[in-house]
Length: 159
Image (cartoon, rainbow, N blue to C red; front, top):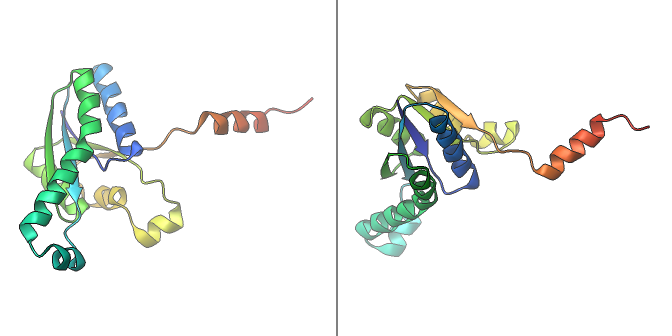
C-alpha cells in the first residue's frame, strides 16, 4: 500500500505523519509519498520578481523546506518514502500525485476551521475528499491536556 501524505509545514500535517507512522508500526505494509503543493505565483509576485523562473525556484525551495519535518519523522522511523513538490491548485495537484505515484490512500491533517468558515473559504482537505479517487483519512488535532482535564472535571459530579 502506498499512502500520500500532503505536508504544508503545519503541526497538523506532522500529526498526520505521526498517525501514518503508527499505522506502519502496527503492521500495515506501506510506503509513503510526501507532497507539498505551492500556490501559483500571484500577479503581484510576478510583477515584483520580473522572472517566473526565479519565482518557481523560490517556491520549490520553500516546498522542499516544508517537507523537512516530515522527512525527519519518517527517517527516524526507518520508513521508506518518496517526495514531490509541485505548484498549482493544491487539491488538483494532489489528485495528480495520487494518480502518478499510484497511491492507495491519503492521510492528511485537518485544517481546523469551523463549519461556517470551512463552508465559506473551503479547504484543501474538503476539496481533496470530493476529488480523490482513493480514500482520504483526516487526522484531527489532539485536545490539549488542560482541555481534557477541564472536560473531565465538568463531567464529574461535585460532592
